[in-house]
Image (cartoon, rainbow, N blue to C red; front, side, top):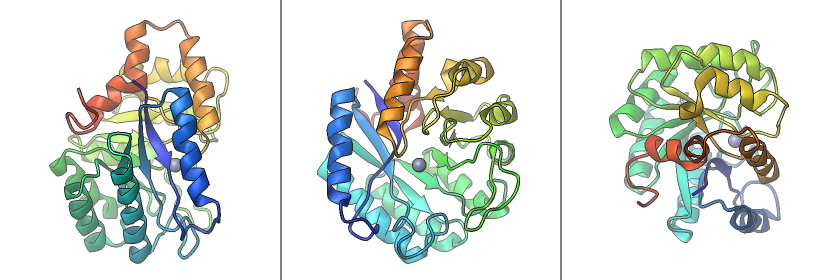
Length: 266
Ligand SMILES: [Zn+2]
């Protein structure tokens, strides 16, 4: 079994005419690569009507509806994270309660607030209460805000995770560019953070360093926007000489423990 914990899909309001083909290609290419399950999110309208990392409540709701539609179209194959913008606490909590009841299995946070901001606390608390993980977008070593993005990096996610020891966090895309070594040092001791291996970077030494920092129990495979780099990382992983049981954990075992029991079948 191979679970992609960081997938994305599009819809007709995401500003690209080929959204249907892109979605279909992800499923088809995933099939060829052996992806059994895509756990995916939609960030509002992907910047088309409101900023990607600061989606408006209307766009959050619309994106989640579209994500749920895809989940229902591909039962057992596609699952959704409920995307929320923590700047709108009431809307975010309502959206989480509704979407989890409708079948979504996790929560997605973008860079709408620094990860250690108190506005993220109610979301983290609700995740623990509902027993679902949070996939948190993280820039690998980002100490200043860029236009349209708060700075969030591993240091801040570690602070949030320490405030919420009963919440499980997925640190997004260690291969997403930037200083992954900084991230690994920042979260190594925080055992309720798992590292999502997605992102376009497949740097020499990155997976070895991740293993050394957090071990196979806290690594989860994913692809993010580019499925081909997920595939590259899978091949790299298989070349590390790890015990088969550890590879299975990274490919699916850890994800099966992170998400609610039984959602991916037996
Ligand atoms: Zn992503």
